[in-house]
Length: 385
Image (tube, rainbow, N blue to C red; front, side, top):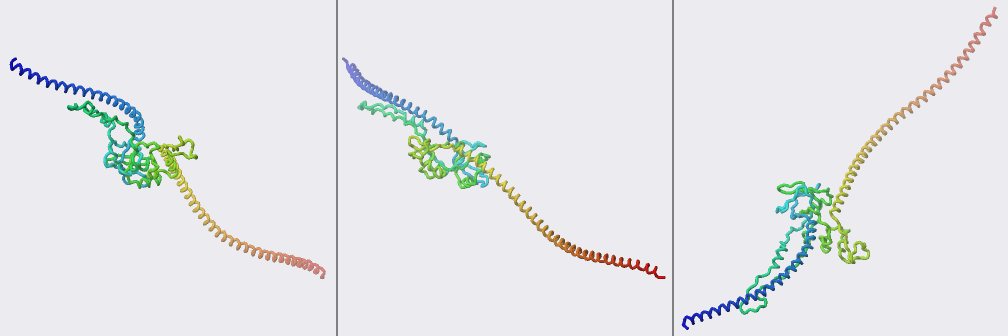
């Protein structure tokens, strides 16, 4: 055998060792990938189960989310009010940052006080979180001498947890209800608002005192058991004194004197209120009362004017009575003087009449004597020769 044949055999032996080593490494890699495939298949199955559970939870949360969005409607925060008209309640609001959703002209809005600027933290995208949690790291080829114990790859992440409903807003973002307003004008510098109903003096004073920022909403949220926190004095301060006890007892053990329809499984459950209907009914009744008050004021003005005219007419009649009494006294004095004079004339007439009667009697007597004298004188003449 020649030297070249021996060299060729040696080279073949060396190359065979290299190929043997590469074959062993390929076998080891193949075994590692087979182990990772089994892990991935189990992880994929677990992820599918988690995905089904998450989809089921999302299906259950979609109606809740839809109800919350429909119930809440659109909201505009950080509205800065201008001076409030103390007679009508008209006000112009501005925004430091233009709202993403513009406010429509002629829109009807519910205005709340916003004691603190709304600074909510940026919420993560639940879908993005789920995708990040469902990611599976690519397998790593095991190092030389490493056993097939699963250390060659990264273990799959835990299944995504079901999303939880957002917590209620902090107390600083809950403010007092200021009233229902309508948009009466949209300008370059602000939005003009006017009360949808005539405000009472108390509501006007409250509107003037709350200098903002305000929160505007196009839908008045419905009442829920988790809106008011009995432990929060700011929440309780917004409620009438007569109803605070009902809110404080909500969800707690019922008393024997509680109405049976408000006791569920031994717990007191307060009645939910439709504040939109309540506010509308209150505005309607207040409008009726204001109309009745205005009508009563007009009636009072009419009665006062009539009473004043009656008093003036009464005084005029009293003046006339005084003048007539003065004139009557004058006429009475004149009448008394005339009566006295008449009595004097009658007395004098009676005296004259008596004198006339005596004179007539005397004349008759004298006439009779004269007749006798005249009748006696011719007889004497006849006797005389």
